[in-house]
Length: 361
Image 1 (tube, rainbow, N blue to C red):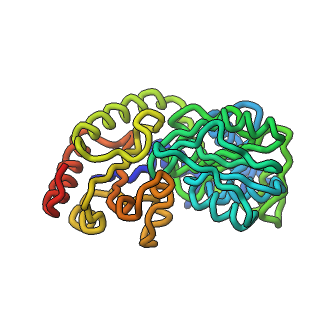
Image 2 (cartoon, rainbow, N blue to C red):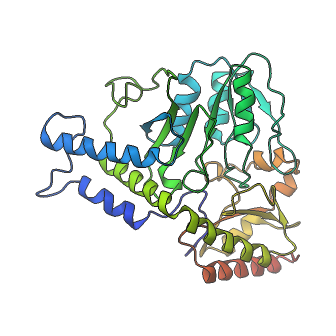
């Protein structure tokens, strides 16, 4: 299979896997110990967690603390609920982890629109009384990079907090420097699933979302998995050292893919975006049929979390696309482990499948 669904999840880095193995336990190993236990084996596991915490923190701005969670969804829930902010304002193209949680917390929340390029205006009106603004760094469906720092400055000027879902950008581009809370996920930066983090600016108090043990600085009760945390840390450290070469590789793949998809319409800005995400459409395409016929290629029609819903993408609709146009879009994601030859082969198969439907550029 040719894997081109990097926005859904990235392949596990071999280095991350190796870092996890000692903490999975086994005959003759003490790596299975509870990191919250006071004995030697427990202290060793706790020390490994703190090493990983520093590795993850290196991807984020200075002046904050890292709270490990089960993933970005939990981190976003902790941020949205734990701050006690009353009125919320979130962008129209946020992930469901933000939109659904925000709706549940504030049924009257303000939705910040995007333009046809998929970008929030840095001067967008923020309603009076807003306590927290949430705008993601890189959109998971179309790859657009938002002006988070400019919006954060305006939020701060009115006394509001700034939350950024940086899941798709962490380890790839510079972190949002002005945010107060940042959510990230290990499995979107070549780490394991089941572990994420919330970065909290120093001095900002939160109420816990999960009670029962006082772990993670009293904000997230429950026993941490040293194996998952160690894998997260190793993946983060690798991103810190490889982000420039990763970006250069992705830029090369982006140029190749854009050339091969000549005549197809790009969804989202061509310039303000992460190049590892290519979302394109062409009139008349039956995406479901194409994906069925290209079973050896892993691509998607949008967010993996919303797959199978049958609903048009809320992100593409926010750009002004009709339901019919939105249902002709494909999302192709690539990254560190994607080869140029396999990308070329996959796109050739996609275009051939489209032509078999009578759809040509």
